[in-house]
Length: 177
Image (cartoon, rainbow, N blue to C red; front, top):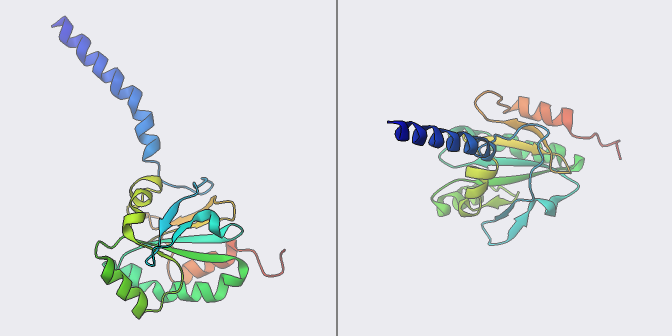
C-alpha cells in the first residue's frame, strides 16, 4: 500500500513538473507576443518567410474554402489591400484545405493576388506555433513581427467594416515616415 502511494505521489509530481512546458506550447497568441520567422510554401512551390516582408505590417489570414465566413471575408480583404497597401499592409493567406486543387481553383476564380500557402506547409504553424482553432482567424503583425491584434478566437472577432476600421486605426498614416 505504501509503495503504491509513493508511486502515485511520484507520478503526480512528474505531471506537475511537465504541466508548465505543455501550457507554454499551447499558448494562444496575444497582442505584444513576438512571432518567429515562420516559413510556408505557396501554390507555385515558392518558399516564403515572414522576414521576406520586413518593414511591412502583415495580416496573416487563416482560412479554408469549407469555411463560409472565410469566403465571405474575401471582398473585405481585397478592399483592405486596395486601401492599405500604400500604408505598409501585406496579406498572407494560410490555407487549411485538405483538397489543394479545390483551394487553387477557388483562388484563381476569385483572382486572389496575395501569397497563399499550401496547407501542408503551414500545419505546424496552425497546430503549434500560432495554435489556430477558429476560422477565419486573422493576426496582424507589426514590422518587427509583434502581434498587434488577433481576430477569430471566438471572442474577439473583427470582420467586414470592423476589420477595415481597426486596420485604419493601427496602420501608420501616409504622412508618417
